[in-house]
Length: 302
Image 1 (cartoon, rainbow, N blue to C red):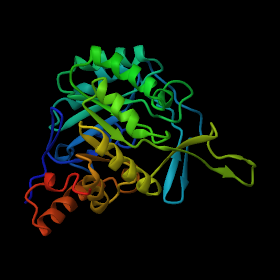
Image 2 (tube, one colour; image 1 turned 30 degrees about the vertical axis):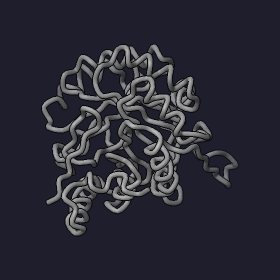
Image 3 (cartoon, rainbow, N blue to C red; image 1 turned 45 degrees about the vertical axis):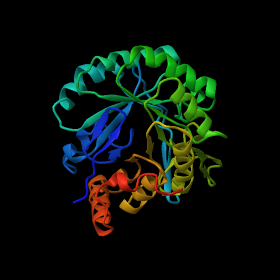
């Protein structure tokens, strides 16, 4: 069997397959379907300094080859995570990574500082790219100055692996990735969802409660793949690729484009066992092609 272990800065992964925030709950919800300890990592649902109710319903709509969502970062806040969720996760042998969001650099930093105290959480993912909240979120991720302000503030209070999740709703994602690297990010993950919309033609109104939402699923894969390729060429820190991955072949494309690891998101809703199938499929492909390690193919496309 080929070696599947990879590193994201100081974060050591058993394999490059992880699950994306917002599509896998806290991981515990999928324990009946997936041996959690066999995943490279689990990005838990978005966590903010204070509890959020999220947006009104309806907030999910199926589209051709994908889905739109405007959930709006519904969660019970970082203190609830630390006191109630973390005790249930800390003894599971995989990497749990907390997706952190905020409405100012200060609230990002304060939430990150609380998570920094949790021994068994080795990394956070800064969500500066969520397109379906009314304040914060994507507003920080669409400019170099905004991205820099959040990463800089968090880096002061957080001393573990810092991953920044980038928005595709920009003109130059590579420039924003470089700014995150300059301010101390250890890795970048991309892409978050693309802004989209669906209309109910009988009711003459948008299908989502806040009109627009984030598009994910297979429809976004070509865009995500191109952006991962561009960013991997622009930065020296590891890149984590996501966006429409549902098969081992999809994942291998992202690895060849320069991603050191991948996240699976929307496909978890279709098949809750997909992450393990993708891991096994990567391993089979590497064996069939005489590769000794998954690192043999990372960034092999010029």
